[in-house]
Image 1 (cartoon, rainbow, N blue to C red):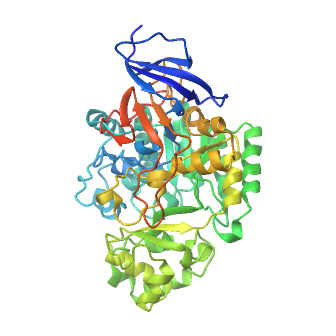
Image 2 (image 1 turned 90 degrees about the vertical axis):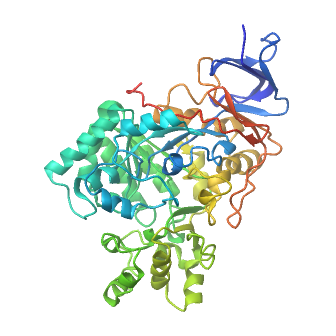
Image 3 (image 1 turned 180 degrees about the vertical axis):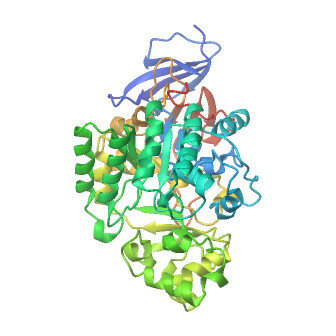
Length: 538
């Protein structure tokens, strides 16, 4: 029997969690034709033979939470994820997805859209199916399993106002969501610390989740609070999943801020109690104690509702600035400045303005002679509100406890970035380039938090199982030939918070559908990635 690729003599860690063994993997027509012990396959004159002695051979990694879709259309050859061994990205998350985009309120949507690249392609109305077909014609570096952001639905139906949707508006959102599910979406996502996603009530989200339930869809939530009210937020996710009949998933579970460190045990108790009661709930984490988001998130929601954050002159109006200052001292909202401290929040991207990039909010305020509130609105004004932050707010003990839990998968929360050019501008979180190398080196190989096989499962077959990504996540005959080969002696993250855009070491080969996208540590822009269809769509 002829094969296209024959990987010989590696330590096979097949994604199932079972002990690794020395063996071979054979690929034919983009599928795995054999994965098993060495010596079972005769010599293949026509096959490309990859010697893998001393290397680990495992399934291509599945990033359980990321934002590859943000830049995929403009940067389909971004190598930051595939060079980590990632072949499939779960995205369309935190309430924001590339589709559907409706016609109504489009101008306001374009104006408020975060993370736009210079010279990005215009934002136009499109259905989920239209976006899927466009991406599948052009190809991408990685596969994408896409959710529908509730902000997309809300903007089209009622804009950015903080109010309940009318019955007609809710029906409109349901229609857009149902159409997207029929076209292959995996479920509904929320970003309940962001405007306008946060304006959706539990009742609204439950009604939308009832739409996705018959499709086997998942309610995937960046929760309403990840700090002081993290337990109440977990209970909301559980209630929405239970009352709608859909599955639930918590994005990047964390207990942020020093006052909340140690709450991981209580968080896990809530989740497992719900599972024991028949509610299907899972979660993911990223392997860092620092997170990242847009700078505007530091402002209170009623200010963001105004849509003035890119206008410094308007924002420093004494009435508005005074209101901001007052609210930054209050604890009845997800107040990151109060919870984390301005010295722990660093501007990671500011449109190339080195006066700000790499500096904390406290440092920027001191250099300008202003307080934290005015420092934030000054940077927002100078960057057209297109600035990012990295915040250091989590603790290792909680992170390790979450990682070890059987319901936990691993994500990066990263974008699709290259090592140079506009996607690498500023000092983006190093997870964009080395999150999985860090997970394998630090937590699996060095600290032995989990056996290697169990850790690899959390990055392959377990997210495939949680999200219903068929035919991926295992080295198994008939599965897609998404394969990662790495050197266990050399694999490591090389980027830092000061110099993040650096290739990790030790990742030798990555195959996507049988074609080498990383060859001997060098990226190849093969664009074999596609928008995958959900189980119902397939």
